[in-house]
Image 1 (cartoon, one colour):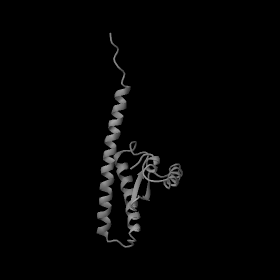
Image 2 (cartoon, rainbow, N blue to C red):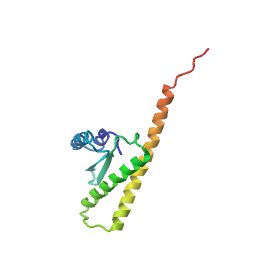
Image 3 (cartoon, rainbow, N blue to C red):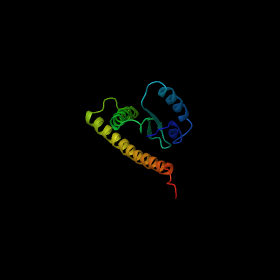
Length: 131
């Protein structure tokens, strides 16, 4: 997950610059989040969710948006496999796995953001005057 599409650009190659421009246009309009797709150097499909309000929204909204984006990741994955009529169980288990991975990454980002916020608060805390 990325909060700034520039983070996604750093993941692979120059082809992602076009995705960055698309994301900027869409976020100026109405989307809460967008998922970028690309192939890594090994040809594997990778996805990055760009969700700029991730730390500002309440947790229910965040989880709902992430779940929504996971369904899109599943759709892209199924299409890449030419899987046009997957079984319901295959679909459910795959979305479950995708969401579990995304949720793990989200929890890591929450902890990093919390530590960063606490660190900034400590630095900005006024020192008591010495008498």
